[in-house]
Image 1 (cartoon, rainbow, N blue to C red):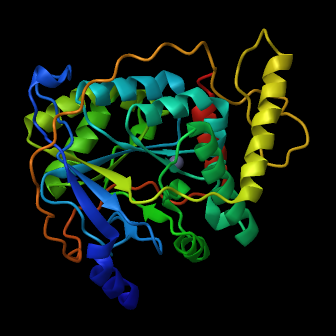
Image 2: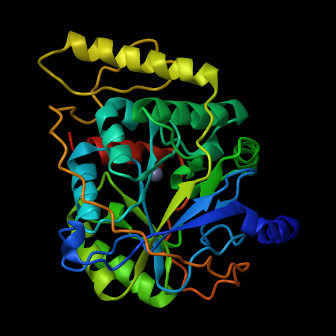
Length: 362
Ligand SMILES: [Zn+2]
C-alpha cells in the first residue's frame, strides 16, 4: 500500500530509536571460542509502536541493513536438543539472535525459554500453536497471538520484545492490523535456510551462503527445532565471519505488554501441564494440547524436559566500540534479489505436518 509505504519511510528514524554500538570482529580475548568471532556489529533498537514491518520477502516498508549485514532469527522452538546447540554456536561467536517462539513449545520447556533470554538473545512470539492465521477468524487470531505472547513472557520470566512472526509467513490483513494496534512489530524474512526440507547441515549452509552472496545481506530464517540447523550453525557462522559478514542484533525499545485475560489462560495451561507431568513420573515428558481442550491429549506431543543441565558460563560480550553512526536509512529499493525459496502459507494439511515434523523426533 503506497500510503503505508511512504508513512513507514518517513517514520523510520523514529522506529529505530537508537543504535547501540558493539564491537565486532573481536579477538579471542573476549572468551569467544571461535578463532574469528562475529560478535555483534551493531544493535538496532526498534520502537514497535504502530507495528512496523521488516523483511523484504513480504514487506518493502523498511530497509535497516547495510551491505554484508545479517540478522539471525530462529522460529518454532524452543526444542532443547536443537535449541541448545544453536545457543552454543551463537555463544562461540559471542553473537546474538532473535527467537520467535511458539507458546506451547515454551510451555513444554519453560527452562529453555529462560535460558535463551539469559544468554542475551531477543525473545519474541510466533503464536500459541503455530496455526495458520489465514484459516482463523478474528477471535482465534487474537487468541493465537495473545496467548503466545503471554506464555512466552511468563515462561521467560523477564520482559520480552513486542516482535512477531506469522507462522508460514501467512499474514492476513486483519491480523496485521491487530498487531499494529497492539504495538507489535512484524518480521518477515529475506534469506531462507530451508532447513525444514533437509536433515543435511551442508545443504543448510549452502542455501544460506548462496542467497547471501546473491543478495549481499538479509534477515535469515532458521528453525531451532531442526537438526540440520543445529548441525550447520557453528560452521556457517565461521564462514560468515570469514566472508566478512556482520551480525546485527535487533532489540526492542520497550517490552511487550501482555493482556491479563491471556496471562490467566497461560497460567492455567502451565498448571495443567504440571498436573499431567506430576501424574506420570515415569514418563517425564512435557505435554501440550490445544487451547480449551478439556482433557490432556492421549498422545504425547512435545519435547522431553530432561534434567536441566547447568548453564555454561556466558562468554563476555566484546567491549563496545566508541561510537557508531546510525547508518543511512532509506526506503527499500524495489527488490533486485533473486526470489528466495519461500516458507509459503499452507493449508491445514501442512499445519499437521508441522506438528509431526516437530514431534516425530520424540
Ligand atoms: Zn514457524
